[in-house]
Image (cartoon, rainbow, N blue to C red; front, top):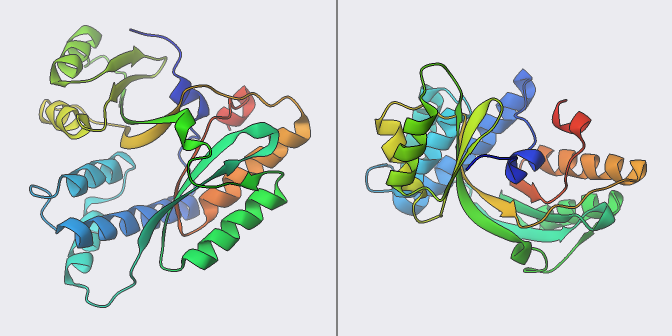
Length: 248
């Protein structure tokens, strides 16, 4: 059950600088706040919150930051009313792109996203124009170490309900259905495993290669500018990124 991970091939590495990390924490905090307002501050009765906390911890968000976001959201009255919304379109060379946002101003967010698609050789489309190319799955990644027995981990993951298990160079990648994600994550967490990724994501059925340098440059800039937007939570695409881009 091992092999090259299509998802890992297109996944941009986590940002390393303090400024980028702070922006990531801000986005995670907004996600936590929206989930608390939707389902309450108790992770035992709000499974989406429990999953969001695990995701934040996997991104190295300090526990005190997580708790502060939850307490603030549960006590806020009349704060910003964020709405979850997705945008779909094509980048240069026909790369499929999905942008997930949380915004208190849809017109502003849509205008900014459309601007970047137009600026970098793509075009924003209608709902459903590319989402059929993706499947929503749970992804759990665990760093390899001498303390982890691969066969034991694989059996524990499959027994908990995982759909697939891959052994990559530096980590194990576990794929679940949306419905079984929380169950599998909690089962592995209770067994003492720590995650470097634990989230629901969109996985493309096929990937698209770009060969023209200008298209590669524009696609890279499109993703960078979209991810840098405060309103944007996630950017998914099916670009088969060049090795040098993956390792930057």
